[in-house]
Length: 163
Image 1 (tube, rainbow, N blue to C red):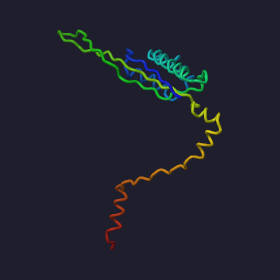
Image 2 (tube, one colour):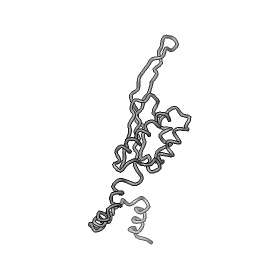
Image 3 (cartoon, rainbow, N blue to C red):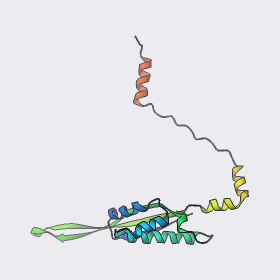
Image 4 (cartoon, helix red, strand yellow):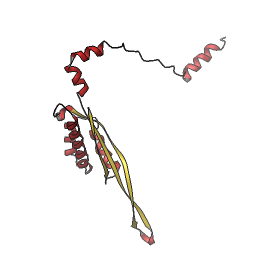
């Protein structure tokens, strides 16, 4: 089972937020919270808030009660660009320099390590037997690859008459 949390229009540049989000992708939630809590970056406070929200969403979604933080993993985490506010700063000789105040959207998806469907099938042996008695597995279809330059050279060599 998985849940997600999205925080939009965060007033940090996406580049700075990506530095923080890259640290927690694929880690367990317990480890990710420790990383974010002790990170000196300002963006880590917002990322921690979004991660805690995603965990709360997963725990509310879960029917069987509360999940431990060690059993939850950060499945995906990404940062998208938000709107850019354009401002003008006075510059010498009557000119104006453009200032771009960037924003971003953070999305974090968390999932439990032991999926809810896997828990249900583990509890009921009937479901596991019926699934095992189902249709046999079909092997993957082989695809024909194009001959590379080395194979073409070998074919030409074999086709040409040798002296």
